[in-house]
Image 1 (spheres, helix red, strand yellow):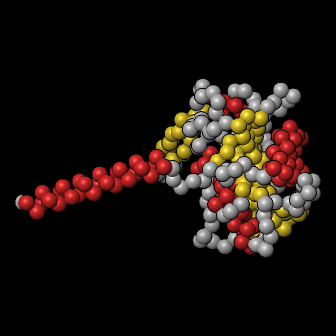
Image 2 (cartoon, helix red, strand yellow):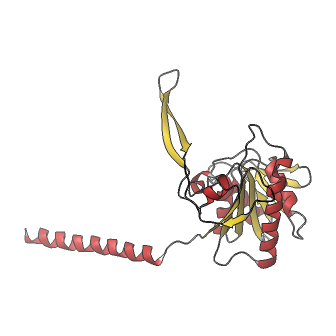
Image 3 (cartoon, helix red, strand yellow):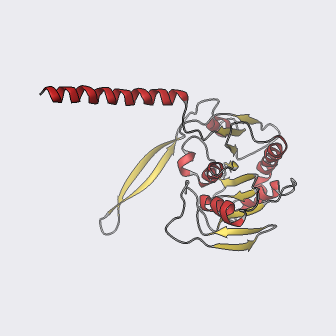
Length: 271
């Protein structure tokens, strides 16, 4: 198994995930960004060199990469462990939740798991609501680590869910004896997005991308499960390039285009 994240190789969440997975009978390697890569999405480095440094953590020796989480997955599969069968890529535990479909284009944690799936390896992304203003101590992840270990152990023993490529797991900030695991779909959004326009000291415009947390979340979704119910959400993600309905409706559109072009061509010839 390979563990990565987007908070950097020295994140307490990464170490918590390593400790949760390290005694399950599998060889566990850590390949993570050398520094924070939050909100990197599925960025990949093509136009500058990547470097790998071996660093000693409180337990494992890790490979620190001066790139994105997706870069780490690529290097793990095609360079560092290219002669080994990587069973799983575990990403996280992220310092902050990654909920709703919006996480697909913002989260480096989720994107690392998706990059693994696109390269033939199942991935699990782990994220946690964090109330700390500063970086939390590793003890803050004790409850999340327990559930992460149970999920990883079950996957190793039973196999990955059929026809599923990625599992996105989100933990509430506080876990107790009443906390439950719920399998739920992602809500579409949790933020109302906006762009702020400002001016620098020379009068030139610049922009901040942002989002305001919505009020009220649809029940039965990941965001309601975690933020309202304080339960653990597990969302299966399938990387399919089509559905029957999508193929049919797109055929209808293309047939419409062909029909319009034929009609316009015939009218043009008559003129």
